[in-house]
Image (cartoon, rainbow, N blue to C red; front, side, top):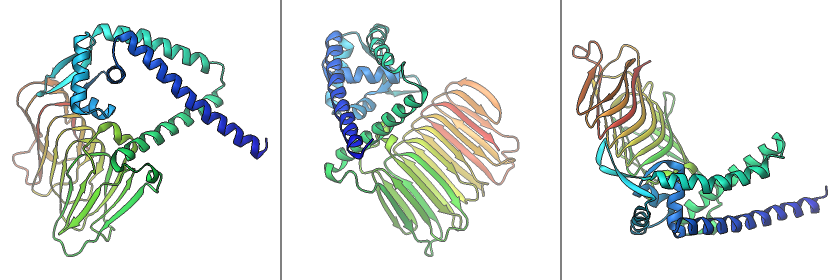
Length: 366
């Protein structure tokens, strides 16, 4: 195949994709008509069909609708008998939106037919061809998600394909203590410790670069927009801390897919405010009583401490699928206090406190 033939094929694929998107729009119009809804309502309905349940804020973020427009869409869905609002049993201040059984049945019939028709187009392809199609579509989705997020933040489409990696270095200086602060959410973060690091902190950001500052030993990271879980798919952050000074860590605004190995760090405190989901933290050996506070609810949270380290856990707001040092406690309600053997006599220990409810909470020793 000549270069000209290859370029022609690439152009034809691009045209076919644009035409496919137009056809998908027509299908959405037809589905909206079947439901008796408009396109914004249908977008909310489709997200709920895929995600099972979401808050109104999460729906607004995922659809880029204003809070008012989202409320109006949910009111229409509720009046039509397609959605209902359910109070979170662990935090009555939070309300989830779920599909009704009737909407699930109708969605299965309508979207099921679309999925079957699409599958019929793929069945004749061999495995190698399917891998090519899959990888191309995944790459295109990531590109488009990233582009949409950048345009919403910068308003400058022409600058959205610039180098998306950024590095930040905070010098060690003569500070006696370090403070790491996320003030408006964090997602897809890898945090670790390097005893050989000559700086206070090093960070690398992929995707939209947050506002980062270092002042008097405090490293402060602020996202340039409100935390939106669906946009974190295009974000990645790697942070390395020095072990030369003690650290206080404050994570506010919500955590999602956060992994930290703090082995070797002199940790003075850890605060997680605003909720946490899919979080794994390896705690270092404590010096004195080290407070760890998690408020705003937690889901799929793992805290692992060194073997032989004493700890107590105080939980308010209830918990489900709770594990503490190998004990599977299932669901607990109200206020619960657990502690390891020898906690009261221990000098170096962890004081863990959780408020706002927890699900799939695991506290264990290495």
